[in-house]
Image (tube, helix red, strand yellow):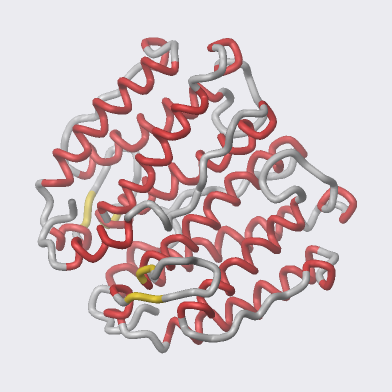
Length: 166
Length: 166
């Protein structure tokens, strides 16, 4: 599971680098689709990932306020801080935990731990696809969505014998 | 791994249903980003999935020609046919096969079988994110990108003890 997160984090950081080249006014401009603006899309990806991971670990919800992160650099800092939390939480989880039932406050039925991890992974890839359309419209460089050629196959092999999710 | 494919296939079919409501002229209109048109995006998702799965199974490349699939219904038929092939191929693969090395003609270095499966999965989610932006711009109904609430957690539990990839 770790290499899926590594994939998303590599791609996310590459998109931070590309979108950093645009003025903040462009990043906060309202757009059709997605969650409305480029800045909010980055924030949403980070926020949703941490909320779910904290929730399935039984931690209270920690809700950053979008208003507190008005620039891409501030959202990048938030992303780095949240990634550290996610890594800490998932590093403590035994591999078998993916098959356990979890209950989060905002969903009526119980879910499976690994189902939530996949939900978070798919959620980010989906929104990155949206960022790629806007990037093309704005004429900035595309980031590859490829999973291959990122060293993740080798990492998968190492994960095979690990007893932890991360 | 099967439930990841199930996720993509459920979402893909739901998008086929939504985009079916548009005229073909809209589907073949050139757009900025992605692979250029909505119809070509659907075709590309289907084509790429089958090409990779055939290649890592050692089968010769089978390259459908985009020109032969001028309508969404024809691409949907192609999608159904390819899905059957993918299911047949992956159903024969032992679970441990995900850790084996594979070599495909269009990539210089060997890859890991499971790395390619993930590449294919991420590839589709990425392009679906693009379709979702265009859908919003065209005013058609959004399809949920959620992995949860699709019965896939229960399916994950069943896969736990299976000795096959599918």
